[in-house]
Image (tube, rainbow over all chains, first blue to last red; front, top):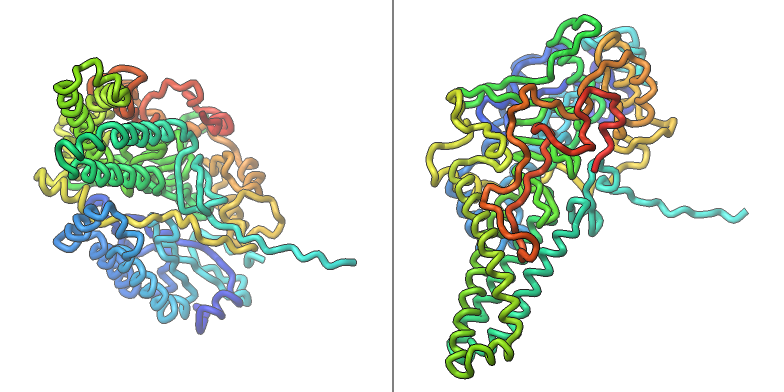
Length: 158
Length: 423
């Protein structure tokens, strides 16, 4: 049923994009970066709910860590101010370090969990931190089967 | 027969960004289009300080203390650094939605609105979110095709949605938003200190010299002093006032935009959901919070085969774009298509235009009630006109959410094209 892909390369070469799902931001706790953990219906047949929720929760935790306002961020802010913020030209901020961690995590999740199921997560920073974009791929061979509920798979994108 | 080798030109993403910003240094510097007033600011600061170093400092260093010019130099460099940092950085621009995301949002809106009978105006595109027991309305931006995050607003001068939008400051030639607000505040604060410093030592200098040579002779000997005093006098009122105003805003964790619109003014028991109710915490969050990264990726490179960002009609459009257009065509049969405007990729335009058009308010919706405050300028008492050396309080940008009086803003739902004409 669900076509198996073995790795990201195969996904890109032999699959065609069928649909995209966008996980929106969750603003209930203010303007901090957080994504909704609601499981989209389009992914129902593609991935287990728990895996998806784990991914989103881990991402939320990373972002919370990056934006945490506490001792370290005050120190960073005050130190930077005394140097007229020139220190940011040579030093990587904590936020940037966490973003790198997030990028590695997403890569790893794609390789291990999502690509084998024909899915691909795009790093939110590439979408303005507004959405987590999940691309759903179909194997070019199986043109008739549709996965997403709203996509009429116009048999493969050519 | 000669093989012509065409050098592969690297296109960086900043070259294809929509919006009305200008970029320098290969995307490292980002400013608004109109930079004239910024140059004036720079000129006034550098000019006044040069006069101070030329006329006052030699005398004061000898007669009072050499620490005076040293401190002045440090303060001057700090002011310039903050000004440049504010002016050149990305204020927190939110990139526009790519076609698939825009289509997805449209589908969600259609699903939420249900079927609107033909001829009836569809309901305004608003999402309600509860933040700290307050209902906050997220508005849809027709230009950027996104629901704006809380506290974001669309700057009509730069034609971008900016996160935690404060105002558009012509004096720094850029918007002031989430990423550069602290630099802007430090700039106004340090400029206030510099102005007070120069003004005070000008007076001291004139007094000391007058004791020796008389008042009129002093002015003849150091004509620069007169100019400095005039500049500083006018700057003082405006900049110090502005600093005071922003200190007040920071202590309440509000933006200029929210203050002017009266978003959290307290009527109907509406309170600011972002405030920690503690002045120190609010100050720490705004000034000492983590420095946010830019989500614009100006210097990323566009791969040659992907026209995702650029409006183009190359036949080799990416499959993703075609797919999304097909999805739009197939799934949204009768209802609001994506509103084409100058930023719609050309290959998406024909199919979109083919769908029945609805008359939406083209770019930004106008508020239902006309009671919102006019985009009046100054929170501080209006100061003397032009010779003001630098800063009369900043005019907030013509945020489209206020009933704008600009002739270029379209008042009524109209064809989308007109609305794209900007200042």
